Amino acid sequence: MTYGARHVAIIMDGNGRWAVSRGQPRPYGHRAGVEALRRIVRAAPGLGIEYLSVYAFSTENWKRPPEEVETLMDLLVEYLRSEIEELDREQVKIIFLGDERAMPPRCRREMESASARTARNQGLVLAIAVNYGGRDEIVRAVRRILEDPETAAEIDEETFGELLDTAGMPDPDLVIRPSGELRLSNFLLWQSAYAEIYATPVLWPDFDEAELRRALEQFQLRDRRYGGHA
Image (cartoon, rainbow, N blue to C red; front, side, top):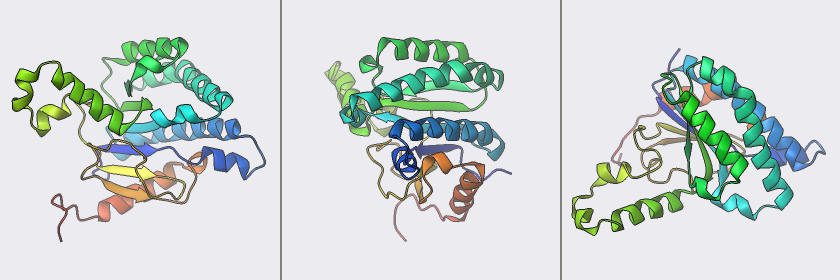
């Protein structure tokens, strides 16, 4: 069954709290979060999702303890190495959102390899946001405009969108926020202007296909008024 949401964006939140609630260190929760991502990537195409954007590491996450940051970098590399065969076989196209320049070399190598290997795939587009911040993305786009000031007057919403990391993708139909928080946390700020938002108290490591279906069912019930008025 499909639900009409072509692009679903997920803020993968709650890993640390999930681990602490089990008496485990935070990295234990991040590893469980990777398993949740595997489940959702496998389930998404069968639910009519064509684009899946996931918030993996924000520009603010560098402020976390160094050992936790190191774990997150390691998990990114492990995920790409362990999943690339299946993702490629299933025609998943992997792209990355964010400023990759600050990422460790080992991460950039795996990211570039995964992007190149899956570039021609025609299935689900999996957009992984790493060193990503919505404000930073907009600032980077403005800097590109300033490189050629003579064209600035020609910029409209459509052409500005082409300067963002998500160029070529439709805007999200649905933004899912696990863990009970009610904020976008600097994720896809421009693109989510008219997205429906679904919040759930379920922590990300416990998120599965059934939870995804619940979110999509709620989305299907929404009366989408793009102008924001009743």
